Amino acid sequence: MKILVTGGAGYIGSHTVVELQQKGYDVVIIDNLSNSTKEVIYSIEKISGKLPEFHQFDLCDENLIGKFFSNNNDIDGIIHFAAFKAVGESVEQPLKYYHNNLTSLINLLKYMNEVQIKNLVFSSSCTVYGQPDMLPVKEDAPFKKAFSPYGHTKQICEQIIECASSVHNIKAILLRYFNPIGAHDSSLIGELPLGIPNNLLPFITQTAIGKRDYLKVFGNDYDTPDGTCIRDYIHVVDIAKAHVVALERLQNNKTNSSCEVFNLGTGKGFSVLEVIKSFEKVTGVKLNYKFVDRRHGDIEKVWADTTFANKVLGWKAEKGLDEMTLSAWNWEKKLKK
Ligand code: UFG
Image (cartoon, rainbow, N blue to C red; front, top):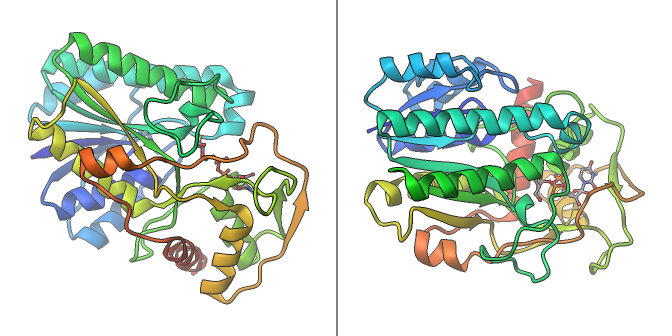
């Protein structure tokens, strides 16, 4: 079985490529390396012993996709990660986000239909829920107005896939990630933020290693037990494994509709302070942090109802918060070396 992984050199993509290879799949990666490096491909090889086939180009270029599919007519399924994902940047440059995230998906769906590739796993996000009315949030919760153009592109992409799969011979599984953190046990792949990190874990590890002076904790006056925001943090390897399970579900014709949606979280919420405590406990490093004003656009709390993913998809997150923070720290130390 040959699987195309778009964005396979990225954070979640690279971990998924490893899991696929370890299950015996051949993997072809398309990535424009806009937010990753060629080194990642060799790190994947170091872990799995198999060098994935790699094509560097932009999925917004319809001609290049056409050429790719005419030279590769043996693809059995697609996992589509390739997208821009920086929330703040999307607010400043919305058109860049709408153009990239929508065009690449539409191009891909068009060719899937033309060359008759049936199965698609799509990388979505709990951002589609906004601040949900009910917690834990279930897959059938309504979309709220998106907090950012990035979040809006995920909502629109989901709707495009749902629509295309209802009329074309395409079956899709949309995976809504909560907050993926951590790194592979080997510390050979992990998150590689460009510039100053926006996300909590890379900021914590970079502060602890001495690259940043202190972590700003955005707000301690939220309506939560310790006043800081709550998220459902999930180990990136658990997320990667869910993609393999989703792909197998599609391949074995187990889906109940042309487009299914699953939450990928642990079902447990942790506050920013709890994440810091976990980090300090497992690493023995004291973290320098200060409370500052709330960050614009942050939601107060969100965590997943994972019942549907556990029962129907047959997948469950296995790793706990301490494992997540420790693996992120090991990765940061490896990067320093
Ligand atoms: N935080 C800090 N200081 C930092 C960074 C983050 O206190 O330097 C806090 C945030 O305020 C938030 C929590 O840590 O309470 C998590 O923030 P992240 O930026 O790590 O994650 P978000 O939940 O804001 O965003 C993530 C993904 C988005 C996705 C969203 C869905 O990064 O891509 O989840 O809810 F859209």
